[in-house]
Length: 248
Image (cartoon, rainbow, N blue to C red; front, side):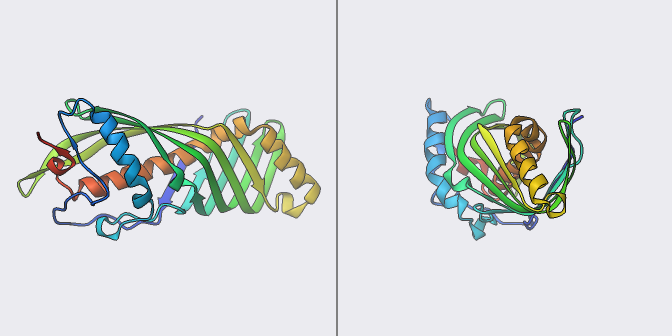
C-alpha cells in the first residue's frame, strides 16, 4: 500500500488579480520556434535564480529555504512500515536546480520538464514509529534528511479559458516523477534519547536508505509537485497565454 501524504505549504491562496506581463527575468518563446524546447530551457534556467528568491508582485514565495508545515507518511510496505511526520520543515538546495530538458506540445496542451538538483537538505522536527525491515523504530526530535543527485520530471496539462477577453492557461492535471542517488538520515532523540539504540538505528537507516526513501520519497515528491503547480498557477492566472507563448 502506498503511503498517504499530507502537505501544507505556508502560502496564501490566490485571489482575484489583474492582467500582468511576464516578469522581466522570464523571456517568452515564440510558439512556432523550431527550437521551442531549447528556448524554454535556456530562458527557464536564467529565471530560476530570480524566482527562487520570490516575487511579491506575482505572489511567488521564497523557495530556498522552502517552508513546509508538514510532510506525513502514514503507511508503508511489508519491508518498511513507517508512520512519520516531518513538521516545520525547511528544504534547502532548490537554488541549485538545473533545467535539463523540455518537451512542449502546445497543440495537445501538454508539457514535460526535466530537472536535476545536486542536493536537497530537509531540516525539521519529526515524529516516527513503526518498523524498518525487522527493526522497530520510535522517536521524536530533530531530523536532517539529505537527498543527493535528484532527477525530477514534471508533466502537466492545461486548457485555455477566457477572462476579460484574454486567454489564460488553466492547469487540469500534473504528475511528478522523482528519483535520487542516495539519502542520508540523522534523527535525534530516537528511542527516548537512548544513544546506543539511536546511533545504531541511524546507521541502519543509512545502510537501507533505498527502502526508507521508497516510503518517504512520495511525500517529498508531492512537496515538489505542489510547488511547481503553485508557481505555474500564479504566473498563468495573471499573465495571458499570448504573453507566455508569443505569436509570430
